[in-house]
View 1 (spheres, helix red, strand yellow):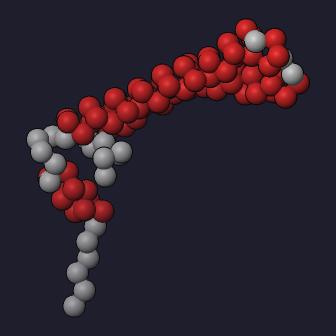
View 2 (view 1 turned 45 degrees about the horizontal axis):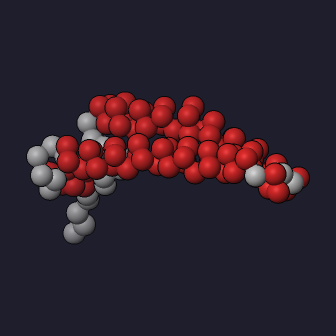
View 3 (view 1 turned 180 degrees about the vertical axis):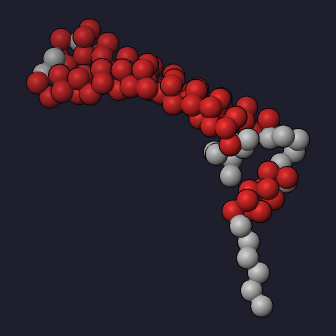
Length: 102
């Protein structure tokens, strides 16, 4: 005799074991997701400012590093906030569960 377990059964079991509706887990992961772009922005701004202010760091190699840092800054400002919004708000409501907590 074989018993079949569906994905819905596993998902229901996983979400029923969370305390309440899982709001504490959502808050924790939302905080983590907001901190990552902030740290990305801060670190890359330090790279750009250090090359800008220190004349001895203005080499061809460091210009390539600065261009990568500027690209990372653009990702942190333009892409990451939208990804956080989609993960926390849109996916959470459409699936009635949060994909990062399982």
